[in-house]
Image 1 (cartoon, one colour):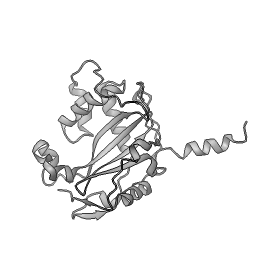
Image 2 (tube, rainbow, N blue to C red):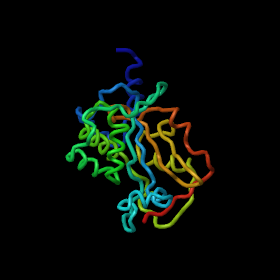
Image 3 (spheres, one colour):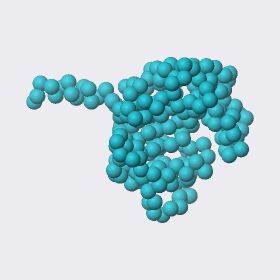
Image 4 (cartoon, rainbow, N blue to C red):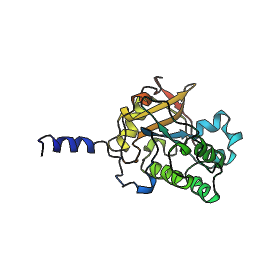
Length: 220
């Protein structure tokens, strides 16, 4: 055995996701792409900026939604990102939508995400929605973002630090914080195709918000 083998094995282990749960084989995407981007949207900001009209259930008072799943997107490091791959059938069966409802905040978003991104994974709708839930369940939300009842300001760098502290082996090279008009919009995490580890993704990380601080709206 090479004297470097134990070192390489240890380095590989540094990328393992926090919970370390083995990904079910039927959730591993067979399509040709480099990594996933799991995007968690800050629901209060979405609701304050016009989302309440589009997704009233998500934005009702008392919903107390903080970070919600926006999508799990196949992505590429150098090539064009896949989109709307027209996997047949185009409709989403009711049983699959029921799985999507466990993770997405609205039926419309679940359908959109399947057609735009899920069809490019090589999975069928039911397995894609299960993969989304599996990926989301691996993440821990920092305490400050659990259910804030008052608006607060925080730097994007601090958001990265809090997520890294809550999720083992997560670094700034594998995530991004996005903002708009001084408000927190979402956080994005790069994952390997088998959902078992964080992936380095300079293309995504360099798009992180450059503001000195962002405003975080309270939950409803």
